[in-house]
Length: 398
Image 1 (cartoon, one colour):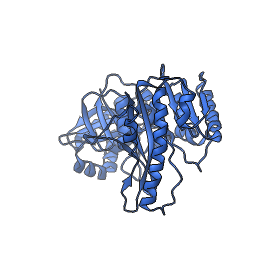
Image 2 (cartoon, rainbow, N blue to C red; image 1 turned 90 degrees about the horizontal axis):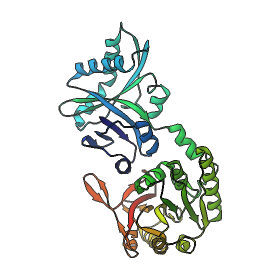
Image 3 (cartoon, rainbow, N blue to C red; image 1 turned 120 degrees about the vertical axis):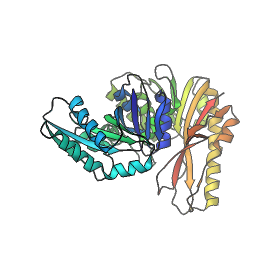
Image 4 (tube, rainbow, N blue to C red; image 1 turned 135 degrees about the horizontal axis):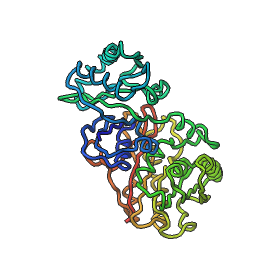
């Protein structure tokens, strides 16, 4: 069964997360923000709930060769998939299927196409076309217009020879993600916080087994990694931070998440510098480390490149001592997925740390990510206008 996934803003990270979680067979499309592959009886609701970087999922139902066949196929699918409703709401979103020219052309015709489908239904049943100011319907529109319940969102993917016609099955639950971010009891924007979606992606990228593995965040901050791990089923969670306020914030947020899930989790929370964790934890007792390491002092944007390089070197020295301690508590074969700072310079270039070199001193090997058909040591997370981005690394304990 052909299944499509629409990736969020950080496509490389979202694609890596998808590959870590979902076993896709032969891929019909894998370009930009679209991945279409073969799956057997996919539970798309469960997959969507687990992923942090995918905003829509759905199934491919048909193909069409030209505009008129596309109208006929969409009208037929409305009759087949929503047979009981007297009046049906539907929308049309056009994504890439690998042919950019056809995508642009079809996007310019999408409203006209929808009106033609509406006309094809006239006499049989009423229909209302849901539109947007942008070429694709957002998750918010799809959910608020109830297109998943008693309506339909068609997702079209133009290819060289045909157009794949998909129907959206799930969208990212923006309300739940908002609550996970803004509804938790302890927040500290002044310190900077790891976004919950990024934390979720990092936990998934670590590829652990929640039923058996122990996960550690040695720079736990307000506990975002641990709450996301708990939501994914982890019950053996450890967090540490040198800041007592951070440890208490983590405790509040973890207990809040445990209560929301209605499960039994007894977190181990430690006030300690990461460099000293081997005095608190047993050797080889940790299976996965997922963490945003200390990002250092907030940037003003006025720093020189020399100042920034010195700041990164100081952070790298701290990371070096942390890795020395973490190596002894981590089980052989254990995976660490870590975020470290990367500084944006005035000319737009980005400089990062030498953490991979230091990690290799203590028996950690870097596992590269696949990106655009090649391998890269880091996946980068950030937005235009930010002074500090995040470099995401994956290390394995030899």
